[in-house]
Image 1 (spheres, rainbow, N blue to C red):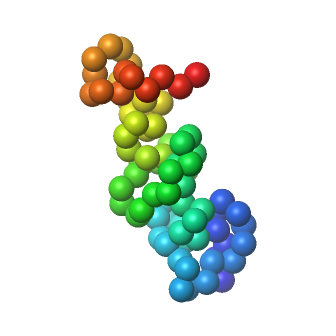
Image 2: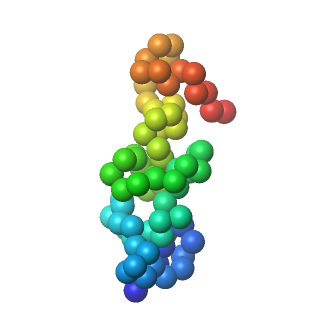
Length: 77
């Protein structure tokens, strides 16, 4: 039985969500930055960790500078 990459507990078939090539609990598939619950296919990954597409992934790993894609208002330090 596969284990969840976030909590390392077994993932049963009824609670399984497949994303990033792994099986997750639905509650464990969350953005690493803002902790928003994610759905498979609607997020991005960086170093194997899930991030919501907007604003977290674009602000952290997208192009920098002023006025590019609306991510400039989300500045994480």
